[in-house]
Image 1 (cartoon, rainbow, N blue to C red):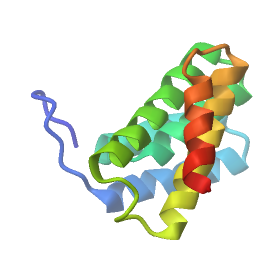
Image 2: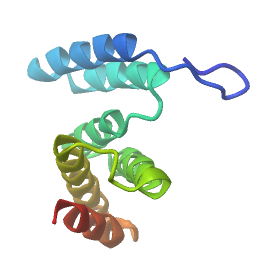
Image 3: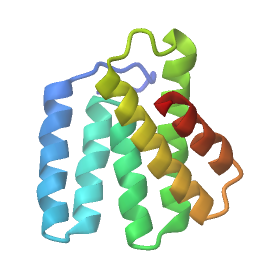
Length: 130
């Protein structure tokens, strides 16, 4: 949870609860409600790129480009920060694959809406997958 000083405590269990609630809403085609659940998940885990990637994807699904790009860009920033901080040495093959997939999704969203960061994001997705 984020306090007024922008300090946060990660609560992955609470974030997961909201992520699951979002998944169930998306299955029922309740996109906006699902997005709101993912935003709640971010409150409990603000450094999880997956939440941002999914919000970007679903905003794109309902053609809200500005919001889609904002969340896709944040997904890219979080993964880029993680790679710069520790490289990929401490990541499992599954985590690297997940990073690559999220970057591919985020890059595609950014490319679709003409964001200048798209190419760099997509190139990073390819480079870490190799």
